[in-house]
Image (tube, rainbow, N blue to C red; front, side):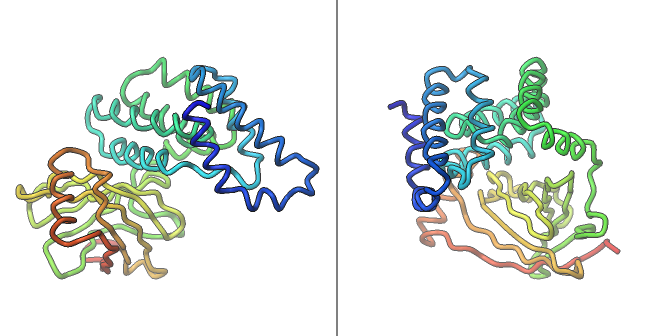
Length: 288
């Protein structure tokens, strides 16, 4: 069995108990599982088979429960998003494309990943590939494509009308670091700055109501000394928009280069396995 289908078999086995409990659906679940594995095999043999890709996305959309996204695909997707949101040159967008493609190799039914890949290709000025993939995405998910296109037209902001307000600068008050939030639709970039040093990206995230979750591949610290560690993080802004609880954990696997990877491994060697850390950020300036 091809490696791709093997990964999916493991995913389906993980979902087996709830699937087996739905036998009353007259064999539909088993038929969907068999078709899912057949399509995976077709895509593994011919990755350019767009009809099979379209079919597997539509199939998974109606499956209940759906096959879990493999850990490998999630890891590559997170890395792709981090590179994509921090990109400042064509070569950066090309790197994001590589990781989106790796994620889709493990999970070719992941619709959102196709959209992100098309956006990265467009930013890399690989316009023919971007247009072809976006046309594919619109055909497979017309409603979602319309919503995403509308979000992409939104100007950068720091607040959601009638919702969370991230405007101004934030910090714990215990050190020099101040954090600023930039929103574009549901995508969030958090910048950090110490005194008058140039700002750098703390990380990128997706906003869901008042909650957000994201990551950073690490990089320059923003002070000219040391590095900013690769991390995963999640947080929530309070109902009165006056406080943010943020939880972060060291994530060496997300390191964007050898320097940050070495620094992260050194931290693990010195301090042991990473644990979630909690901070409370208050609005330090700006806002309403």
